[in-house]
Amino acid sequence: MHHVVTSENMQTERGTAHMLDIPKTTVLKQLRSVIHMFTNQYQRVQMLHMGDHQQRTDFANEYLIRYDGNNDWPLRISWTDEAHFILTGNVNSKNCVH
Image 1 (tube, rainbow, N blue to C red):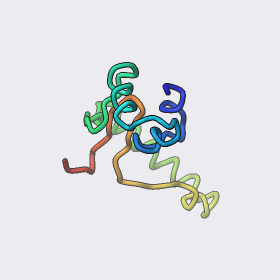
Image 2 (image 1 turned 60 degrees about the horizontal axis):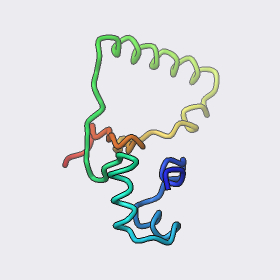
Image 3 (image 1 turned 60 degrees about the vertical axis):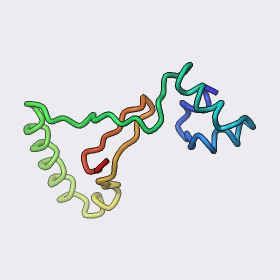
Image 4 (image 1 turned 180 degrees about the horizontal axis):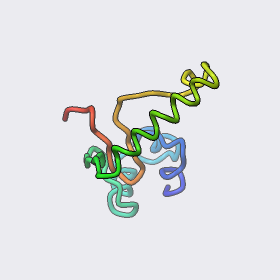
């Protein structure tokens, strides 16, 4: 089960249970006790640090340089403001209300 849960195309608990042909409660128990992943437990991971201002400025300058060279470049970026769910159980909930 650990390999299935930590793979890049991780599914929901229900999908994992269906794929492994075991009850959903068994998947949840294994996630909690063995793999130490807790579903629906949110932890904020977004935090601005002192060096972030310079990093953002560098990104904006790099963006403008690449845009001047190739006007299609911004279309290949996937922009989102949704939460990011990380396999360690952390959630970047910067734009989420819970």
